[in-house]
Amino acid sequence: MSSDLTRLSAIDLTRRVAAREVSCVEVMTAFLDHIDATNPSVNAIVSRVERPDLLAQAAALDGGPTRGPLHGLPFAVKDLEETAGLRSTQGSPLFRDHVPETDSIMVSRLRAAGAIFIGKTNVPEFGYGSQTYNTVFGTTLNAYDQGRTAGGSSGGAAVALATRMVPLADGSDHGGSLRNPAAFNNVFGFRPSPQRIPEADAADVLNAGMAVLGPMARSVADLAMLFAVQLGPDPRAPLSLRDPAEAVTAPLDAAVAGRRIGWLGDLGGHLPMEPGILALCEDGLRVLEAQGMQVEPLAIGFPMEEVWQAWITLRSWGIAASRGDDFRDPARRALLKPEAQWETERGLALSGSAISAALAVRTRWFRHLLTVFERFDYLALPSAQVFPFGAETHWPQEIAGRGMDSYHRWMEVVVTSTMGALPALNVPVGFNPGGLPMGMQLIGRPYADLSCLQLGQAYDRATRWPEKHPPPIIASR
Image (cartoon, rainbow, N blue to C red; front, side, top):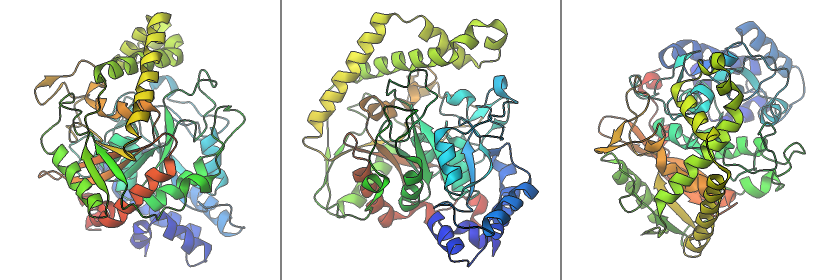
């Protein structure tokens, strides 16, 4: 019975709890037992809450009215989010013992919807880099090969999902932090439109920025259910979008025949790719062609090196705004990982004219994308340029013989949508001969979150990758 509960979708779990077919205590017990058996092998869930406390919270929910759509679901919040009463470290020794007094906006919505917080999911230090390791909790290991990286920064979330230690997970994304770990662990991760899920802790809440929060799940239907809880305006985030949840999450089922996808591949050779990645994505596109969609190779027609250089300028500028005080204090700077020091120092040295020039490139790129979307409904790209690499490797130094000049250059493929403020959904596309997963980005028009999810739903129904191919670590249980 216990193992059966962890195999259910989030939607099925909530239905059974609502129908009193299973209690919140039974659900919690099943997941805690599964976590005890699984987490030591992958190190995805950290700062765990004690079992008696969790069972007491579950029993209290059993004795009261349904609180919301996540009533009684065990949930591990990404460790970049402030969670009241629960250690929130950001993967940094600077915050090793930090216990917030209040929830972030998004976390408060999860709590109000009935989720029970069992702990946090592991992250790279401050979320910098698509490899989940830190000096506080160590390294999170891939769900499909425990010698490989989980990706990041939502690496703990993706692995906890893939191994069914949680039914749903939250993530965040600037440089692929939702899309890359989802691809590396055969699950779905959605980067929604900026300000769809509000944040109030930015250095400048009147600047939309490029980092977003988003949902992760093993099916698009589950993902949309979580997304509906997370999204919506908040007065503390004055730019937050005001569309009601039903306008951007339903109906998921829609005819996709006749819709057009522009396949960007490796951007005309601009991006080095490990062998096998493009072929897996093209297999995925054939699934959509079989449903009547039109897929056409597309030359993007824009100098992509300019987009990259503008992105790293704006990223360093934003990181310097967050970490500048830490960098200026020698004792605190010594506790920052080298990549964080490099990024912060770079950002502090930027001139106003350099920042202005980068913003101008971003605007030109966005306007160019509008012309592309006159011909296409969606764009498609791989979600990563390499398959999951060794867990001991901080970041790939080269791809296909081409050197990487920064700790995030190997993830350049995700910058296309980040710089264009576009919604992007990672969908699984299968495995290489070594059994390592890969994913593909399905990218929608500006603010077309629902359309992006509808495409993902059609793909999910046709493939069922997470359902049909669970990780070997749990497949026999």
